[in-house]
Image (cartoon, rainbow, N blue to C red; front, top):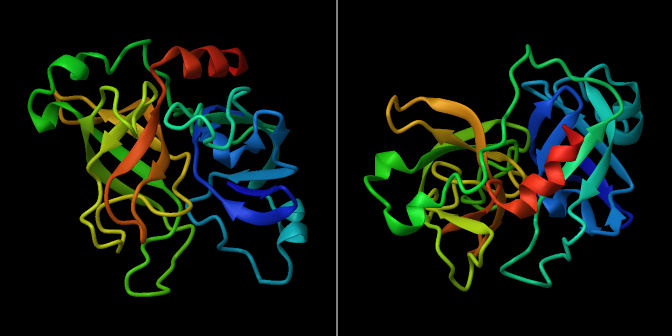
Length: 244
């Protein structure tokens, strides 16, 4: 995703196609708050989104592109730019002006309370893993190292789910960073809004079920613990379902 927000941009985020013209992402990727959506939002599903950009001007490039599609960003109506932290309502959707062909494969939403069992019984780490995906920076170590729009995918473990100062009732804690900020173990800037796909503990296979979207980290340099916004709660399901 590329977007202009509050007159500034283009910024980047990640997301998941839930159908041919609906993208699930983070609230902070869709607006300043629930009443102030992005002024411009574009989405591409190309594996190398900027492969054909010649550097002459991003606005004209997006307008003329055959794979970037413009859309209307819609933040959750209670998203308030993290003012209500840790219950942030950090979820949004983008309704595209045209369809994007994914070959018929789309992300799916979980049933309500899908992750609740982990609150009382964590079980083996292989029984609470997700595949996190994003198109952001690949790391900030060494200094100034950057490679936006390269697809990152890694396996993460849900290490926290119950209420805490950072989780509230809406977030899950993921152990997906080695603490080096070099992209080898976790999400980074630009990965916000990307999916956490549930890994079936029985088969070890990644599913299409998006149990959370990348929301925030609590340490600098893309190192340390990350938190993702749950999709199996009313705040997400009641908001997103009408767009599908």
